Length: 203
Ligand code: CDP
Image (cartoon, rainbow, N blue to C red; front, side, top):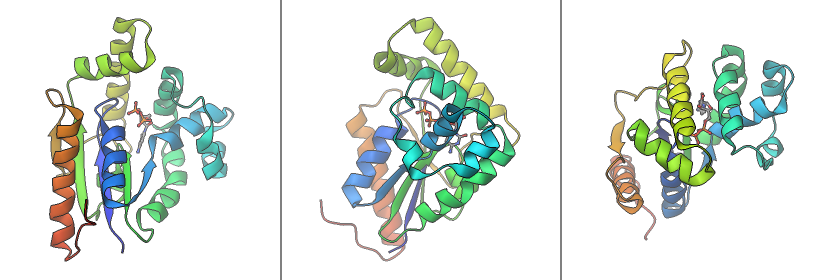
C-alpha cells in the first residue's frame, strides 16, 4: 500500500510528536525531514556537497537536536541546491510500501503535493517558544527570539517557504493537549484512508 501523510508547520508546534503518534497508530514509517537539514548543517564544509553525500547514517548523530543545529539547519535550508539534493530521498521514503508519515516545512507543498493526507500543525510563537524552552532550557527570551528568527527565515525564503498547502487541514495546538491534537490528526488520516478505499489498521 502506498499512502503518504504530509505534516508541515513551524518549529515546536507539535509536528514531531503528532507524526510519531500517527505513524505508530497506523503502522506507517516516519521521517523527520528536519533531521536532513540539521545533519547537512552539522556536517560543516560546503552544504551542497554535504547534502549530496548525505546517507541515512548521518541522521543518527546525537547532536542534531540542539538550538544551534536548528539554526544551522534553517541557514542551509534556504539554499535551493541543498533542497534539490534532498528531494529524491524524501520522495522515495514517501512512496515506500506500507505507508509513510513525513514531517517538515514543504512536504505538502513541494515534496509530496499529491500526498493522500495533509496536515499543517501550528501554534502561537509564545507557546512554541515555551515548549522548546521546556526541552532545551536556557534563557526563555533568547529561545523566543530564536523561534521568531527561524520562523521569519522559513516563511520568507524564496525556495519552498513554510506555508500550509491549500488542501491541508490546519491543527492549531496552542490551546490543545497533545492527546487531543493526535486524535484530530488521526481522524484526518482515517478519512483520507477511507477516501482511498483503504481500511485503517485496528487500534
Ligand atoms: O524541530 P523543529 O521544528 O524545531 O525543526 P526541524 O523540523 O528539525 O527543522 C529545522 C530547520 O530545517 C527548519 O527551521 C527549516 O529551516 C529546515 N527545514 C526545511 O527547510 N524543510 C523541511 N522539510 C524540514 C526542515
